[in-house]
Image (cartoon, rainbow, N blue to C red):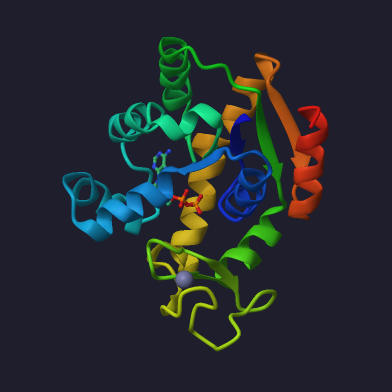
Length: 215
Ligand code: ADP
Ligand code: ZN
């Protein structure tokens, strides 16, 4: 399947993507993960992106489009992909249209995961992430704590609170989402591609997507 997943930080894009990739071998493409990897490896891209990310600001569109142009041409995308965290602005969405046309790729749908702000805030402030960039397992101190406090069940690395998951950065990310990314819903609705789902349970989201795609 070839999908865009829209949804505020904490809406469950990562969790839903993981469930969907298990269905048909599509790959999850998260610009956030790619950027965090670049920051950790200290690449040119990472150096340019770091300050924006730490403040909860968006990374400039031209950097993001460079990443995506390269990523979408990797052979593993042929089986399908789930775009998680991209596009994030109308200019990115417009540039993506041009890029997909050029690569002869057609999207199946754009899924908008809808979650109330109070729920998002609660989920994000209690979220913890495995610090190992090859693992990045997500935990929640209330609903899904690691078996041993502060230690990843999967790989044993420390489980941490991300820099951009402090109260202040979170509230900024939600405001940025409402201002810059929420307008993408109507952009795709006009094209008849939008599918809006209530995202309180990730299993229900996956079921709705399977139904929509006739799987
Ligand atoms: P979130 O949980 O906020 O959805 P992500 O992991 O998707 O977090 O992204 C983390 C950070 O990486 C964002 O706050 C932003 O600084 C940057 N980022 C990720 N994707 C994009 C994008 N498509 N455009 C601009 N900045 C991005
Ligand atoms: Zn881990």
